Length: 294
Ligand code: ATP
Image (cartoon, rainbow, N blue to C red; front, side, top):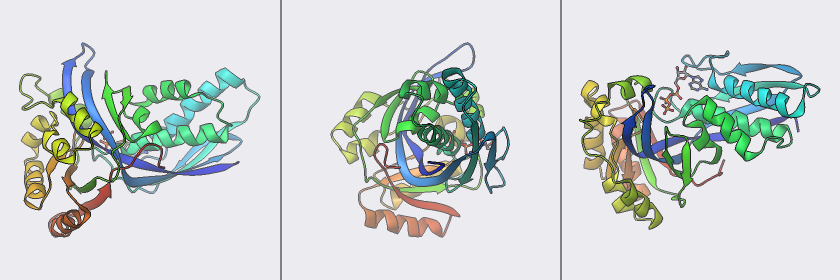
């Protein structure tokens, strides 16, 4: 096998809670993450040496700054430790972006996870799951989630994952407004004493276990909204519109600015999508997906 192409999904955060801030600026969080059927296409081809990245997107670098490039670099460093210098180590990576950039949908992290998965397959699964997980954590908190996908609870600084029962087929509409939000800025600006209503994560996990979409939709919370909405009130307007157009619940994903709504059925979701398309440029209809369906 010389090359592999993977469809790597985006994620939404069904909830985000921040428990504490560490002295080094990192935050202890409790998040529920859900993979959705919006995919970047990541193609990885073995080459004799070096790493190259191709990605035709004005906001995505094609050099060492690309997180996919870093993923390959870390993979090969580990391969060198484990297998020694005799094995040829090189990768030509091409990425077709469908996941909007700077959106709160984990686009870069999923590409990085895709490169780790693809390289491991191309190198006969020489790194075990534990090693891949270790590498993913060095690349960024969300990368580990995308190695498995599905529905997961993330704790610690976002890298301690617990798999939850799969909740596939939830009808979602996403709106990505025409501005972007920096994740570090959102966390730095967060006032832990003024986060608004915090999620009851145990209740949300229970709703997922019972596949109770009404309870899930009505209990979703994201404390980062307290920061982002102050700067961009448009996010609140979109959430209100989602509800007006039939959503059971609506929240911002990650640090934003993408807003998603959970709808009771496909028809209501598509009708809402058709209305939102008149007002926003980037509107998506998606479904939640299970683990490893990519
Ligand atoms: P998250 O939801 O994980 O916070 P995000 O949607 O806020 O993610 P991304 O789109 O993943 O943000 O990343 C945006 C930044 O990362 C930009 O500076 C972009 O240039 C850089 N970047 C590096 N590699 C990639 C990649 N493969 N895809 C997208 N962005 C990348």
